[in-house]
Every structure is written in structure tokens, then in C-alpha cells.
Length: 268
Ligand SMILES: Nc1ncnc2c1ncn2[C@@H]1O[C@H](COP(=O)(O)OP(=O)(O)OP(=O)(O)O)[C@@H](O)[C@H]1O
Ligand SMILES: [Mg+2]
Image (cartoon, rainbow, N blue to C red; front, side):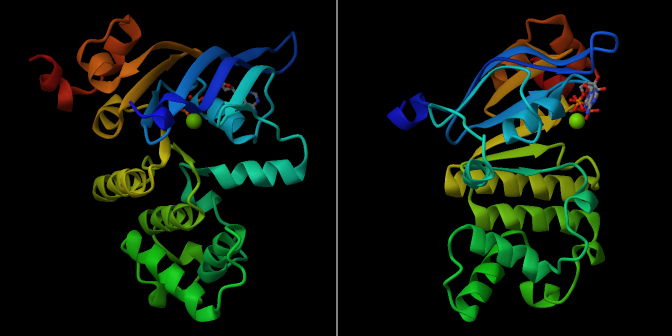
């Protein structure tokens, strides 16, 4: 194991998120601990309402932390000012479930991609160099940049919009990508394409990918490490084969029993 692999790029200590007040209290995330390493694909799997999105929003700095600590690159995360938050977001980005809600409707596709180039400190590049980068990003996700200029994201299909989100990530090159149910609104064919693009991002850039899903079958396909989440807690975690082929917890076994299409694999 390399030194780089040994140091977690993102870790959480006793993270808690409580919504509401004493009368209507929801403990969405309940004392979770984790260490995610560089270049790993980590799946967080749990049923609806188990706290996956709440945890991802806390990690992204989009939701406050009730208790506990988040460490980024070995240092206690500091997002106390807008400048520090912008700096943090250079290192961590997200693709969400609903591509329709992910874009500013007033921005054309080339402005969306240009923004990413500027955010990476490449504002000084010539128009031709920027066009080259945008063409490369689009071709990474099997889109044709020349057919997209002057279009708005909402003129694309759901699958194409989600691929454009991945083109943004390709340009931004964060260390960590959180993908929260990125394939739940697209068809099976687009789902496979998007999963493979996420793996390509990891393979080519050593990106850490935190993949959030209720589908343990997808987690089995994509991840190196799996964390199982139930009622805001991590009940089981470890190497994907270990957790999925030899589950210890009843909750993990139940999630597995809901996925008949891959059940044969762990019966052997
Ligand atoms: N802004 C909020 N205010 C109050 N309660 C919330 C808020 N956001 C989430 N919750 C509650 O926190 C719990 C966890 O919700 P969360 O969205 O994190 O679940 P999830 O695992 O992402 O579910 P899904 O698979 O349906 O997306 C739920 O009980 C939910 O009702
Ligand atoms: Mg969710």
C-alpha cells in the first residue's frame, strides 16, 4: 500500500445531523465514522430515508454538521468563509440524482463548461484552447461539443444531461466526487454508460468516488469498498466482496435479498 493510499483523503468522526427541534426531532445521521482513501470507489448503500443524501450534503458543505468532525486531506475541514468554501469545492464535487435540477436554466452548455475551465484557474487560455478542452470533455462522455454550442442543458435528454454533469467533473478534476443516485432517473443503457464513465474518471485521474445508492447490485458492480447505512448509522462496512458475498448483518442480507438478479453470485 502506497503512503498516498494510507492517508484518508476524507474522513468523518462521530458525525451527527439532527433536523427539527425537541418535539419533531429526526436524527438523520447518527454518529458515523469513516475513512475514504484516494482512488477508491466507495458505495454508501441504504434504503430510502437512511440518511445517505444528508450525509453527502454534510460532506459537500451544503448542510451544517450538528456534531462531529470532517477531515479533508488529513486536515480539519474549514468552510467558515465563502473563500474557504470555494477552495474546498475545488477538491470535492457532486453529481446528483436529478440532472434537470442541476443546471441554471439561463446558462447555455458552453457557458456551463467555460465556468469549469475558469474555476480551474485556466481563464487566461485562448478561445481555441478553451474550445479544445470543452471538446475533449464532451468526447470523454460521448457527446459532440460542436452540436451542443448554443443549446441549453434542458434541450438534452436526461441521460445526456447527466453525461454533461460528468463532463463538468472531467474539467474540474476534483479529488473527490460524490455521486448521489446518479443513475436512478435514466434508462438501463444510460445507467451502464454512466457507471463506466465514473470508473474511467477514477482510473484516469485517481479520483475518489463516493457512490450513493439504494441498489446493492450497483454497489457490487462499481465499488471497492461498501458502507451499509441503516437509520443514520453505518451498520457494516468493508471490501465490496467481503460485505456482499459474506454479509454479517441482517440488514445487509435483507438488502441483498431484494436483488434477485445477482443473487446467484454469492450463493457459490
Ligand atoms: N431538510 C430536512 N428537514 C427535515 N428532515 C429532513 C431534511 N432532509 C432530510 N430529512 C430527513 O432525514 C432523513 C434522511 O433523509 P435522506 O434524504 O438523507 O435519506 P436518503 O437515504 O437519501 O433517502 P433516499 O434514498 O430516498 O434519497 C429522513 O427521515 C428525512 O425525512
Ligand atoms: Mg437521497
